Length: 310
Image (cartoon, rainbow, N blue to C red; front, top):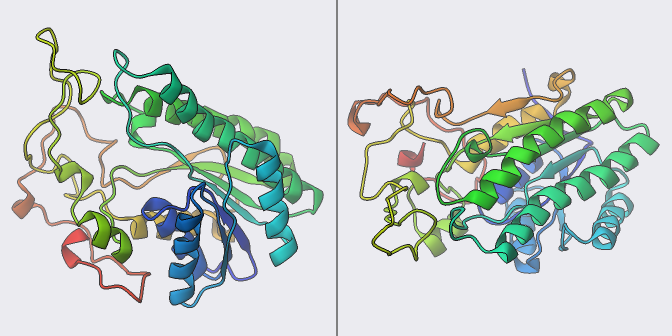
């Protein structure tokens, strides 16, 4: 089976240097023309340059996903530039935050608006374009393990990712009569593999980084606080020994957007090394005793990937 997105046009929101850039690159490597959106014009431009270095075709469409007029404008730019829209990846979101005792109303509101309103507006207008032009397209919203299970210290993120999951199921029902599929994709804490991102932020998995903070955030130092996040180094809690990379995510999202997945809608594709399936009492073997998955099939031919990340 050879997955091909030749002739298709994709829009990726939040095409920053980690997951968004990885998905955008994968869609391009599988043959799609890609429009890279980010509120930061430099991030959108960097995603385009990475695609072009790897032989793909892309344009930057910077803009705020929560601004209805900006969304309509950049989607119109895509349609005018490439002649169609077949794929939408709703990836824009605010990371980080604090727990329920400490999160600010301002951050909570902005985080929910970016992921919630942003996904709604892009789905609405990309979906309308597909329906009006008879395009049986694919819309994928990037969820998170935090949208399916509880995790301390990220109350806004958990709220909007959980809401996103049911938004997708409802939107799938709205768009099914038009042949438009809507799904979620759930990764968890991928190890960066974008050479530019690694050069700026360093290598290593999010799961391997030390976090020591009280309930609700890094400022929780009061005596009554109780620890809610892990601290210090720890063995991998993921059965396969790794949560993968944005390249792993990109391979699977590309397949989900292909015609091979023509009857898959209103559901969730999980690529997390078994993290969500794990029982709370199960503890994998030490890292050195975990066989791990097969080697990663790279997509970024212009950068060297650390084999240990796979």
